[in-house]
Image 1 (cartoon, rainbow, N blue to C red):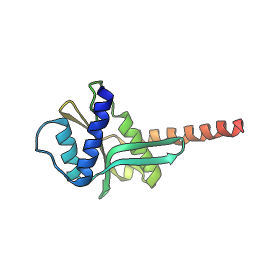
Image 2 (image 1 turned 90 degrees about the vertical axis):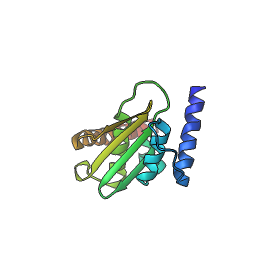
Image 3 (image 1 turned 45 degrees about the vertical axis):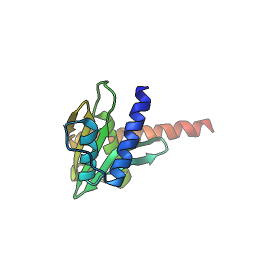
Length: 147
């Protein structure tokens, strides 16, 4: 039931953002997430792709004036980590050939009527990019061995 509710809330947020429909200003998770995404002119449900082995979909993302913003809506109560958003930032940098040290990266998680903000060090994103590249090559080698 909670999973279905989360899916429906993400779908609602997607449509509200796409249509530019702001919600009343409040400290409610959904309202803050939707209004911020509209305010920052973010793309919603944006696929990020490095290879068939390394990809993901950001809830909302924008890249303007050298600032990469990635926001994630969490509808559950379990504890969360910024790692997923850091991976999305690494995938973005790989896909669009950006150096993390050349851009500003701002990550946000919206959950339980709070916004958790994080600006990861460029070195952290670079390490994740290196892992993605290295493991992607390993996976491709394994696939070739199976042929």
